[in-house]
Image (cartoon, rainbow, N blue to C red; front, side, top):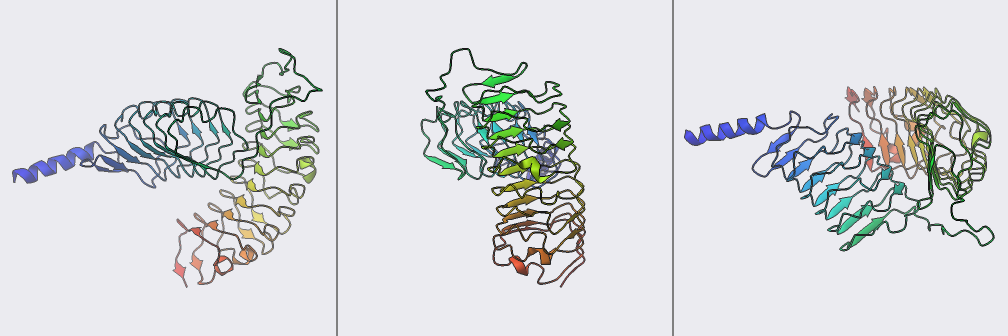
Length: 437
């Protein structure tokens, strides 16, 4: 009886110190909080935890010092958590951590202090994010790292000395989109004079990284006169309202342009003219409701276009016909009601189409016909009442289809026949299915 009472007491103690949606194994010091709806890292995780699995939650940001109370963790899994940002010092206190998995999130940048405090880390998995920039020094304190996985990201080039400090690295897995880093040396006929490098007033220009930033400066007009070798330009959180024609003169080397949260209602014809090297354009969280194809005149290399969280009620028909290299199109969280024939005209190279969180009730049978290379189609959180089978014909490369959170009540036995030979990942949770035949 004494042993039974002791066992019951231990179970009660474990339960009392285990976060509500989690499962805690105190004997092995493991904590699992899988596929829940956690919006923040729990603050009552047992202090002696060694393995912490938080996959499938919703942690948009990992704030600084959030793990300070659990210093004994050696394995941390944060896959599929919709993560977009690591604050500097996010992993402070995890000096014993040897394995960190951040795969399949939306992280776009690794700053110099993003991974501080991980002196024992041996395995770092960053596969399947949206990383386009890694600052020099981001890996500088990871002297024990042996495996680094950066596959399936949006990296275009790597800065000098980016892997400095990785003395014992054995395996480095890189994405396939890397291009040779352009030489920072100016042509002989245009020598640089010390101290002559221009930068608009109120902005910061980095000659080392070829970046310019005017983030959150309350600017009402897009500044000009950035250095001609600028490759990343961050203009987020300024009330521009509109992008006029030829708004970025002289920036032929610009690769990435950030215009998120700028209250933009209009992208004028020729607004991006001259940005012949532009690959990434971020226009999310604005007020755009329409786009003309002429707005994309002069950016033939554009591959990644973010238009999520705008005011579109339909896909701007034919707007992408000047973008033959468009790979990824984000239109999630608008108010789009249907996908009609001709909406995606010209997007023949499109591979990833994100339409989650709209109000789509119907997809025309020929709506996806131009996108014969499509690999991912995300339609979760719409108003579809049936699987759009007819629209799936002619998509021989489609490997991932998300239909979760649609009011689909009936599903026939051949609804996925058009993509049966290619489909690898199918998401059908929270459909309210009543009958499968």
